[in-house]
Amino acid sequence: MSTIIRKQPNFIKTHNLHKFYLLHFFFPKQFNLQQKYPPKTLYNKQSTMALKTSIFSLLTFLLILPNLTHSLEYPQHLLDETYFQDLYNMNIHFPVSVSPASSSLSPNAKTPRVPALFVLGDSSVDCGNNNFLGTFARADRLPYGRDFDTHQPTGRFCNGRIPVDFLAMRLGLPFVPSYLGEVGAIEDMTHGVNYASAGAGIIYSSGSDLGQRVSFAQQIQQVTDTFQQFMMTMGEDAANSLISDSIFYISIGTNDYIHYYLQNVSGVQSMYTPWNFNHFLATSLKQEIKNLHTAKVRKVVVMGIAPMGCAPHYLWRYKSKNGECIEEINNMIMEFNFVTRYMIEELNQELSDSKITFCDTYKGSMDIIQNHERYGLQVTREACCGLGRYKGWIMCLSPEMACKNASTHIWWDQFHPTEAVNAILADNVWSGLHSTMCYPMNINDMIPANS
Image (cartoon, rainbow, N blue to C red):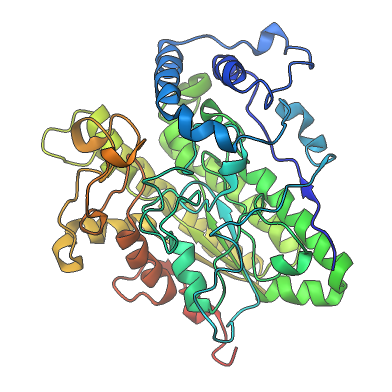
C-alpha cells in the first residue's frame, strides 16, 4: 500500500493585507513572517468596503474564536500567486483522524455504477477541506452538520448532506472524502476525492478576502497529482481506465460574483460588463475542462450558479422590502449559466470522446422557490441560521442562532441551501425527477445501463 503524500494548498493573496494582519495576530503559527513582506505595489487602495470588511471580520472572528482555534494545528506559509508553480513542492503529512466524511462512511453496499466520483468547486460541495485552512469560510462547528448522518459538523456548509452526498448514494459509492482530510493509502482514494474549497473561484483571487482557500486552478493541479499517484500505484492502464470511467462533478463560479465582481475588486466593473465577465469566466472554465480531458477525464458534470439574488444575504444587503429577489444579481447569474451551457455544447463537439453535461442550478432552484409548497417547504426568504433581517446580516455562528426545523426552509444560512433543497437538486441532476436541469443528459443517462 502506498502512503498518500499530501501537497500544500494555496494561501491568502498578499494584497489583502488587512486580512493577513488580522489572521496573523490570532494565528501566528499558521502564517510565517520569516518571508519578506510584498512590495508596496501590492498594497492596493484601501477602500471603504475593505475597511468595513476588516472590522466585520474581526467582530465575527471574536465570536467564533472558541470553536475555531482548536482545529488550526497545521503550520502554513504565506505565498503569493507568483509562486503558483512551486505550490506543490512541499510534502505535508497529516495525522490520522476520524472524519465522518471519510470513505469508511458508506451508505451503500451495492455494486458501484462507476469506479469513483471526483468533486471540484466551492462551498456548495466542500466537505471539509477548509477545516485544514486558516480562513473565515469554515463549517466545522455546530449547528453545521447537526442533521448529517453523524449529527456533527464535517465541514459541509449545510445542516446535513450536500448534493454530492446524495449522488454518491445513487452511484453506489461511499461519501467522497476531502482531499486534505484523506489519510492512509492511495487505495482509499480510488472511490473518489473531494477537492472543493469554500471561497474558491474560477478567478485566482476570488475569495481571498476570507483567508486561505484552494482556487479552482489549484484544485485541477491537485487532481493531476492524485492521478500521478494512481499511475505509480496501479499502473498507467488501470489508472487511465479508472479516471475515464469515473464522474467529475464541478460546482464553481459563485465566489467570482460574491467576492469579486459584486465587490468591484480592482475596479473590475469598469473593465468588464456583466456579459463580458461571464464570457471570461466561461472561457477560463472551458480551458480547465480541457486540461482534465488531457488527463483522461471523460465524464464531467458542470453545475451552474444558483439564484444568489434570492439569497438571504442579498435580500438584507439590498433591503428587499417583501423578500423579492434582487433582479440585478439574478440577471448576471442567468447570463453566466446561458454562456456556460453554450460553452458545454461546444466542448461536446470538440471533445467527441467525452460526455459533458451542464446542469442549470438556477432553473432547478427557482422551481423550488416558486413551487415550494409542492416540495413541503414553507420558509422561502429567511435563512434557518443567522442574524438580521432575513437572517442575512451575520453568518451562522452558534446553535442558538438556528431554527428548530431546517427541513421547512429553503436557505440554511446566508448563501447555502438546506439539505432538503440539496436532495431535490440531486434528484434532478441524477434523473430530472422533479424538473429538467441538465443538458444534454443527466448523470443516469451518462452511465451505461449495464455498468
